[in-house]
Image (cartoon, rainbow, N blue to C red; front, side, top):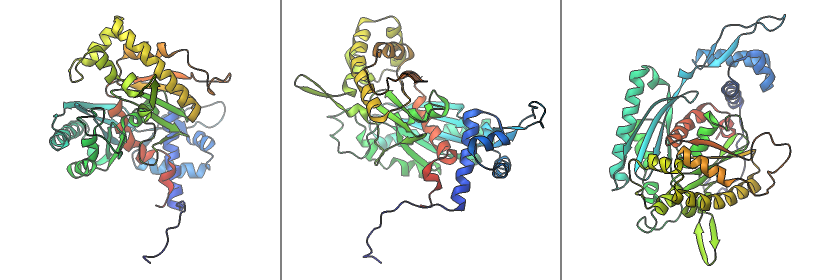
Length: 401
């Protein structure tokens, strides 16, 4: 009835949802640990041996898992280890940034197979979207040429771009930090129509966290925060083994946190991001050799670079203290598009960290560690998202809704 009041409730599950979840749990165990026997999987997942056997048979038939040569342990019967088939699935990842777009193809275990990039026109998404679609088509064409059956095992297209999404913004002429025109554009609809693929969206910090979780230092960590230092600043939140995105996809937008110096209030990313470094050095953010230039100057100990590092480290030290206090992670991972020499100097300058609830004697991981410092990390994380959406154990995957 149209007048019926809405009822708040969680969605339930059914037998199919439980079976799908157990299947994802098995795939996740093999991804985290490498080859395991059926007995190993039953012990690790607390599933019955019969349930594991049934799932393994399904996964083998689907081309996602393969058996390896049997091994003998002690006096018992030899056991057969099973491993994921890298070519069991593929995904495309797309990064859209202010001047460039990058596309990447990965397999089921996150190996990079193809990567390509293109410059985006300054005129906005209407002219930029055809560039993006051509780039995706080039990657798909090369992937199919390399692996003829890849197209039928392509699980989706992941897109990453700077956030925040859906917030009230100034005109970009007043606020060059935002990508409001692209965020307001029906990009996902255009990409879905132009590629025929299922399309997902996340911000660049979340994408970096997705990459770290799949193939980086967060690979076997259930609670981690990835502090992303790129053109802007963000935080990708891995909480209880899943990426937390918030109510509107804007969780972790720590770059918008306000800092007060005297009478002046400034956002964190206006002080400690790569864009602030470019401005400090008087460099053109559009320059094609910018990454190499920053890396060279950081390695040489350029005084202007060191001055920025000292200032940025102070602000990022505060940000890490806030992250540790609010989220209680096992570790904080510094990642993003910063060149390796700059990132290495920056993480050294941030130490020692401020006291927080993370400063405990029983730690097994460092409070702060260096993750991916790679121009392709965001695109790789974008590609990892469709793989995770299809195969990772997620609470949402077992719901009927």
